[in-house]
Length: 132
Image 1 (cartoon, rainbow, N blue to C red):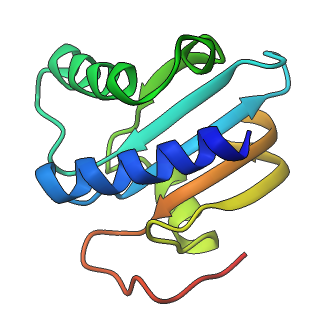
Image 2 (cartoon, rainbow, N blue to C red; image 1 turned 90 degrees about the horizontal axis):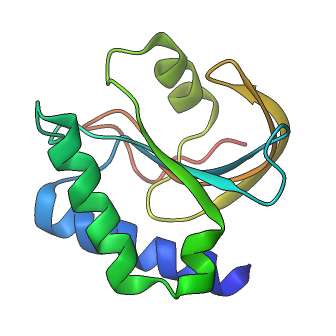
């Protein structure tokens, strides 16, 4: 798992440098989907065409992850920046390119067994402040 987390941290940083910062980049394991992780992301640079954004992120994942690692991913979920749950999450967890682990919480109406939040911050917010 550590290797996957390290790869995703590097990937998130790489994409941020090319496209702009994420306001959320997280890997979440839902209780109802054992051993299948969701990659959840939000960014102001997401194109109005969600398919194009999903294709871009999927292509980047395929370029970095092994086949076995890709099989552990269930889906990519894009969150609108105006989502109130996103804002609450950004208040609770403030991280930037530094994954933190979360356990047994409810995010976006889903019970999360375990997760890693790589970036959670509002655009232009202080990246040095971390709260868990």
